Image 1: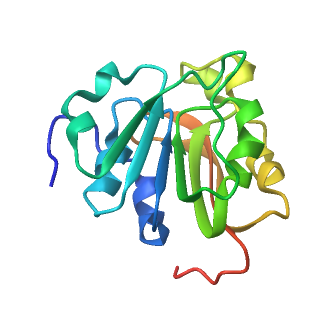
Image 2: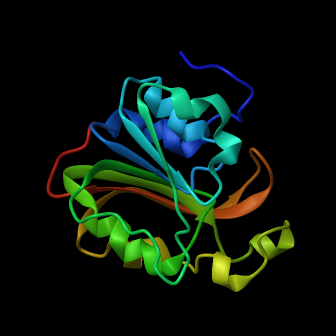
Amino acid sequence: MFTDDRPAPSGWITKFAHLAHGAVLDVACGLGRHTVFFADQNLPVTAIDRDISRLGGLRDHPKVTVLEADLESETPWRPDPAAWDTIVVTNYLWRPLLPHLVSALRPGGVLIYETFAAGNEAFGKPKNPDFLLQPGELLDVVGTSLTVIAYEHGEVADPNPAVVQRICALRGETIARL
């Protein structure tokens, strides 16, 4: 098990981690807390971020591949269609990427996504509406392409007070173990 001083994984991610399988993509991985979490479950993880310097020794983990890429540049990295079994995103929103994430799931794949939503301005950053989901926005993104297992939009107290929106959705008509 890879242990260090990274923050604990998101409770939303751990709640649905039992659905994760195969190749995992950790988008805008930051310090790599979810990369470590899934790699410790013996899943191969690709961690992508524009600044990989914060990943430290995680870059040498045998289950981890690190990609340094700016997801928001003029020629951004985009995942190939049907390339991933599990896609995880937390605390990151770049709307042009969203449809690519949905199409990047293989049949039976799972998307576990959690980020800030409108109303978070009262609690701190982000305050810019460009980085805050509108009510129902993740539901609109997955549309009929994915089957929604769980969706929430509201105020949370842990780990810090915030307004978040989160979704767990599957590609195809797979019956999820809830």
